[in-house]
Structure formats: C-alpha cells, structure tokens
Image 1 (cartoon, rainbow over the protein chains, first blue to last red):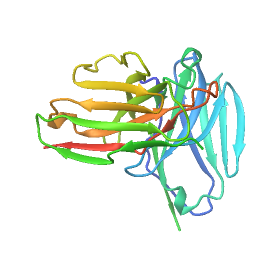
Image 2: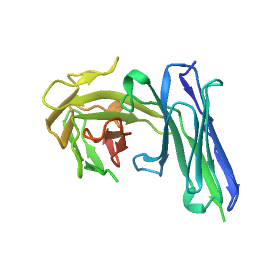
Image 3: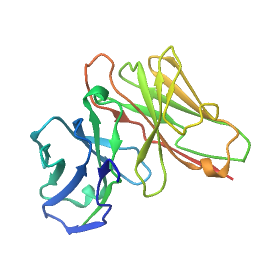
Image 4: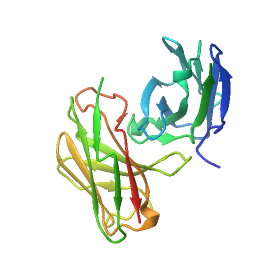
Length: 113
Length: 117
C-alpha cells in the first residue's frame, strides 16, 4: 500500500464547475500538507499548504485536512480552463517539516470551455 | 514569491556521457535543496537532499556515485548524472526552501528533461 493515495483521473469538468480533489494517506505522523499544481513539462507550483487539521482558503482554492480520517481535499471554485493541470498532494511528518515530502501520484484535471 | 531556477530545461545526451543540471535559488538562500525524479504519469520521488558545505544525503536505492550532488553555495546545487544510460532518461526537478523563514514550504524549479540515446 502506498503511503499517499491519489486518484490519477483524468477528471473532466465544464468551466465554472466546483472541483474536488482528494488524497488519503496511511501515515498518522504526517503533519504538513500541501497541494501543488503541475502544468505539462513544468515543475510543481505551490498552491496551498497547511499544518495539521483544518481548512484554509485562498481565492478560489480551499484546502481541507481531516487527520482523523487521514484525508485531505482541495476544492476549486469557478474552475477555469487555465486550471487544467495535474494536481499533486504532498505531505510530510513533523520531523521532516516541509522538507521530506511524500507525493501522491497526481490527478489530471481538464476544464473545458 | 520564492523562485527556483533550473538549467538546462532539456538535454539530450549519448549513452556513457555525463550531464550536469544546475539548480539556483534566485531570491533567497537555501542551505538545503532537494532533487526529485519523475517518470511519465508518475509522482515525484525524492532522490537526495543536497546540503550546503557538506555531503548529500541519498534516498534508499539511489546510487550516489551515479548521481553526484554538489551544493557549493547558499544559492546553487548541481546534480551530475554520470555515465548516463537510457534508463536514466527522466524528468529531474530540484526544490528549495528559504532557510531564513523557519518552516516555509518547498518551491520547485521547472525541471530538466533528460533523454539518453
């Protein structure tokens, strides 16, 4: 079993839809949680990061962490074609801080006009 | 925001040759940088941690003699793939965090696509 599970998709939605992206994990030591966006042939771009449980909102993006269920989510409101990319969740135990990240496989998202 | 620059973005080399990839933090200092590898449609796998002024730390299964890492300054780390073979063809990505900002998250370079023929 992988430490971090993420549905690879692809996920196809119409413009304006609310997108829900999720990851589950097995290591209860994970404390730092991040979401990255990766366009084709580019490096990952940091979208959101949180420490421990709770919600965090930034513009159209909301990140949620439920440590009791070992489940994290990223919501994208009013999705745009420019949001089409691969979304990677990443996490790290307390001892690693934001350093030693374990990534999910990434979910490919396509937002069509 | 923090910018990590990686060069070259793409390189094609012949089997048996060596290739050097540079990773620079442009507007911050990084005592530690990280090198990842990504195969098509797969996730990023940490290869090694580059430490300024000391030896790199390699993840299990990564050959340190094949992937030479040098972290010569607070803004530059290099990865040299020695005696490259076709199976080394991959997308190599470096990352770094601002050493002066406590527990700040990682920022990534744009990656280097290596093709070994």
